[in-house]
Amino acid sequence: MQEQNSNTFKSYTLGFFLSIGLTLMAYFVVAQHLLIGWDLVLVIMGLAFIQLWVQLIFFLHLGQESKPRWNLYALFSTGSIIFIVIVGSLWIMQNLSYHMPTEAQIIHDEGIHK
Amino acid sequence: MNHEEAQEKTLLGFWIYLMTDLLSFTILFATYAVLSRNTAGGPSAGQLFDLSFVLIETLILLTSSYTAGLGLLALRRSAKNQVLIWFSITFLLGLSFLVMEFREFSKLIAEGASWQRSAFLSSFFALVGTHGLHIAIGLLWMMFSIILVWFKGITPFVSSKIIRLTLFWHFLDVVWIFIFTIVYLMGHV
Image (cartoon, rainbow over all chains, first blue to last red; front, side, top):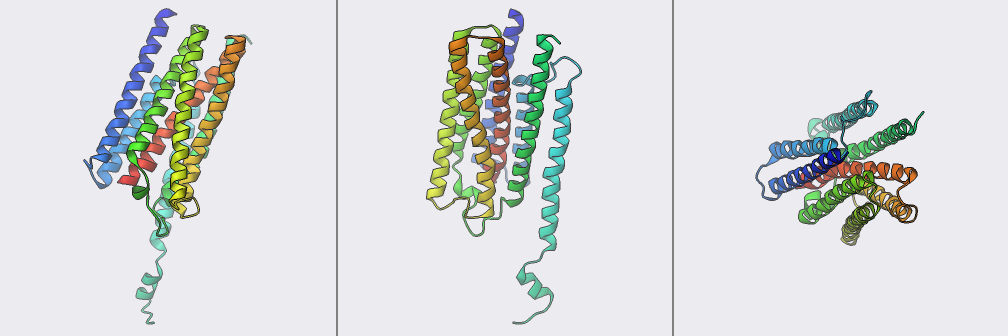
């Protein structure tokens, strides 16, 4: 029991320092303008997902439960719904705004003269 | 059904609640992602948000998640005083986070950047405000748990409450990482 306790203490502490490091890294990449545009978006999103993984493993101790692991199944199905909702919304709204011309575009395309 | 099995079932039920709560955050994130550039001629994310201020908020919440974890370890050892100390520290950190968020909101509103200004700001206040509301509820819950531990000691009833509270607190920290990244860091891209 004592052994297990010190292990989880180590895992919390490790997770804490990793999270702090990842947060500071993301902050400095943005604040120092080290990257621009899509590269920057991909790097900071990547750092956020690494931190998600760190916290799931070291803080929430996922994967150490007794089987069957219903909580993991719930997490994965929620994850797939999240993916569909976020990507779907962005996709549909992007497409909508692409096909929805502004007034100036309509005037130009239709050759309307005021 | 023995006690341990019942405990495990309760935790799974709570986990499923957290997953549905995650879905409501998902809707708010999706709304924000779609509307974040629709500023209606008003201020944009890059002009409004002070990154170093939000970094401090983030570090405070992160530390509170860690101290809550240490409190949970103390609970497993049935060390009453340590449980009280760690959760009081967590409570104070959570409270400072909430106060900072409140100050940020009132500063924005004073500048005329309230939720009525643009679609971007409506979705911003809805997303960050909902997270803040969760933190406030978590703090109330923590206060009651601390009082319970103080008066009743570490009973099975109290400890199962605190295990769920800690899960909730870690969950809010995970949601905040994405608010920090998507709202604040991406606002400066």
